Image 1 (cartoon, rainbow, N blue to C red):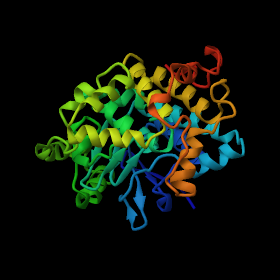
Image 2 (image 1 turned 30 degrees about the horizontal axis):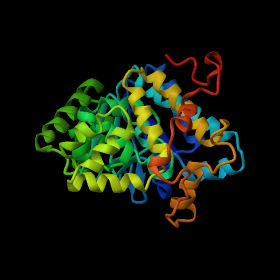
Image 3 (image 1 turned 60 degrees about the horizontal axis):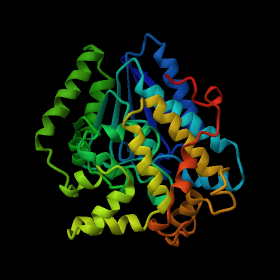
Length: 367
């Protein structure tokens, strides 16, 4: 089956992710195809802009992309398959390419937009959501960390909302995504086909004029955007703390319902990966995109190929999380350590030491 459908229509390179049975979960081959396609179109004068969408079983749109294929992560890790390491290098390179793309790149983020789907869309010059959008960086659910540039784009959200999203895996509606700055405009799902056709199939107007028309229409619908229902004023101070430990102290001291629910959610996650994620997002505040991607590449390597003394011989948090939530579905991961209070700095710090010399880093050339 052809997982990436691509064609050039009226000056627009059109991409449809076509793996609907997995919510368009990304494989290494899909990532390589997308990268080669974008590089080819970047240098092709016939292509003035790029538009990307997903599909579901009923046809175009419905779901954008649920992220990387985590079943592949599980199988590759248990078999020590090198292609897993290649996957993250290629995926982060693609994220960097999209952020630095010299032509308009428009992402139609309908339905599920999670993990790697955010890597395909957050660097877009215009990000469109709908009332069906369900957006998240849910990696802490499986003992991983928010990657594909999350250290960069989550820190662009105001009021520490990005840290909250990254730590908790909070699911955002299309309205929420626009409200917090993770989307630029809104379309009703019933309007997607017509607007896609208007953008990609009109020979009577310039590509730039078609893009402007789409943007104006989407921006007009932003008038109804409101504060997310899950937002609480305590979030700003709680997730503005310098460490996760201090944020947890604020949650414990608070009597509010929001604090209780947030604390309970965090107690279900991998303690060590929560601490790592918080530290990652703190570091990301002062890093460039390329630096964030290099840091995330280091973290991914440590998650799947632990070499530091505090983790060697212990259960792999990410693989255990995938096992519990996706493979066996017993929803009872055995985290190590089990409690938030048991995490020490000696456990956290090795994750932030690169396993490569600077000149040998797989993303060393990213600017």
